[in-house]
Amino acid sequence: MKDKAKQQMQEVASTIRKIREQKNYTQDYLAAKLDISQNAYSKIELGYSKITLDRLFQIAVILEVEVMQLLYPEKTGNLGPFA
Image 1 (cartoon, rainbow, N blue to C red):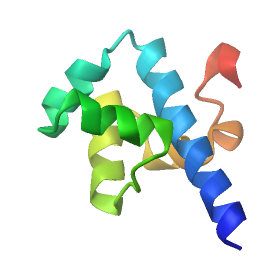
Image 2 (spheres, rainbow, N blue to C red):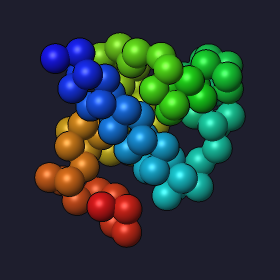
Image 3 (cartoon, rainbow, N blue to C red):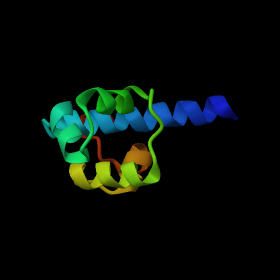
Image 4 (cartoon, rainbow, N blue to C red):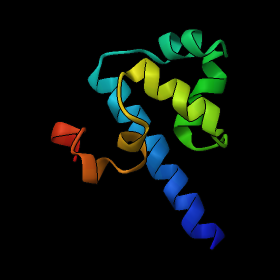
């Protein structure tokens, strides 16, 4: 059970990174918007930090996507060439 949850968190982190790159946003930009360090933000994208629900919603707002697009990109088709 833990392995599946960890894998899903990695997928969400990867989706966040892909969408950020698609929008040409830097890690520094998102970190500043989230009021955290670039290092702390990097850990989110690498899956080293657990993302709170609050943080997930904040990231979705900054990236201008629905939270469901971060959780289920294959069902929402938001990644374009990355899907």
